[in-house]
Length: 168
Picture 1 (cartoon, rainbow, N blue to C red):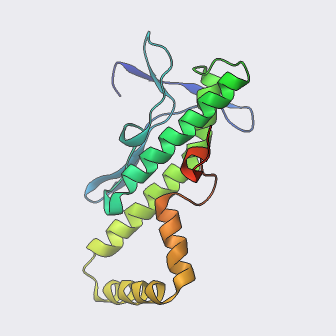
Picture 2: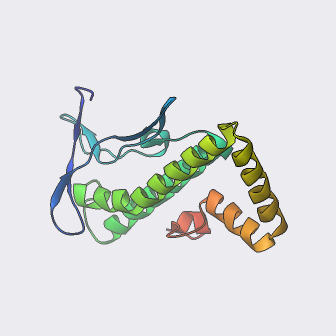
């Protein structure tokens, strides 16, 4: 842990206080994805992390960029909503809303890209056959293919207004 960063305690949905820190999932080859939310620098105003500063995943299919764009859109929406309500847009409570909004999506994408990386980097004949059959099935089922494309583009789930083409 850097001497310049300290984890921020945030309230969970149950009301209990939990310390948020950088989280890593390690593979045999090292860190495959990392997520860090709720960090702020000593003696600086509260800051929020987006994009690769908040999470690092395997660069498979450019998902880090898609996640970063979704982070920025979600943070912008949270800040604008808070300002409309007369709240301090930089308060911990407001930034915690952004953190809660993006946490599941970030962790799910980290697990998915890690799994895909492991699947496609494995030389097992059985896994190669399974992934070839799986790709063939997805390619032949347009509805399933559209689902995966929308999921990869970040257009599934709680999508920020900016990514839906709506004004804040």
